[in-house]
Image (cartoon, rainbow, N blue to C red; front, side, top):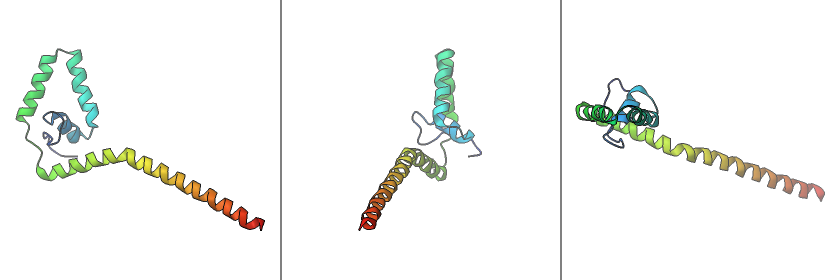
Length: 110
């Protein structure tokens, strides 16, 4: 978690929501949803003005933190793949165990 609030370099639109999410260690989708809900349930103009002011006045994140953002994004993207990979490996192991079982039964029958 960063100590200071920065505008993220790899955000969707100006990096404000990702910067807030990284600053407070929240999921970025939750922060974006908060801005969207605030814009819907209040008048849109003040929320847009606050967002643009934040985008204008917040400093971009330092480049050494940028690598951390990339690693976090990579982990978020690899999470579904890692679950699939572990499930695939367990299925493969189960299949190998069944093959060994049949081979053992065939050898024992001789």
